Amino acid sequence: MGIPDPLRDPQFYQGVPLRRLVAFGIDTVIILLLWFVGAVVISAVTLGFGTVLIPMLQFVTAFAYRWLLLARTSATVGMRMTGIEIRDANGDNLNQTLAALHTAAFMVTLGFLPLAIIGWLIMASLPTRQALHDLPFGTVAINRPD
Image 1: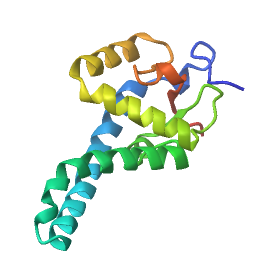
Image 2 (image 1 turned 30 degrees about the vertical axis):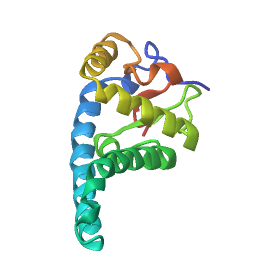
Image 3 (image 1 turned 135 degrees about the horizontal axis):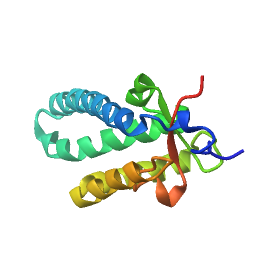
Image 4 (image 1 turned 90 degrees about the vertical axis):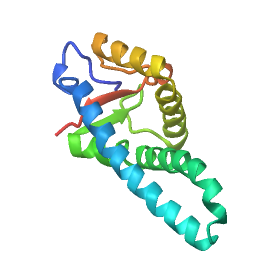
């Protein structure tokens, strides 16, 4: 089947960059809340000695949140709220492996500001609205089909 053709079915890509940005904001708030709860629990359970793990917990929380949701529904909570989802090169939902690889690439891109800026410029210029971390895997963010 493949991904929707941006020339024949442009409705799948209209507004996707802005929706991805809004979804990122929503997901960031959720991840920070989950991280905060985890940090409180770790601090309480370890009587404060586990606080050295809190910075690593933020990375683990962000990775697990994105990976598990993409593998299960091809969309994070923010993506679902904004009406988008990630599809593989065949137009299918992501599997566990592809969701993990996509998440790792996303986090690397996000971790280096120049890569993030390049990713947004690429997304704005491609008809499929793919970001830098989408390109190696052929994934696309599309408006969720009705």
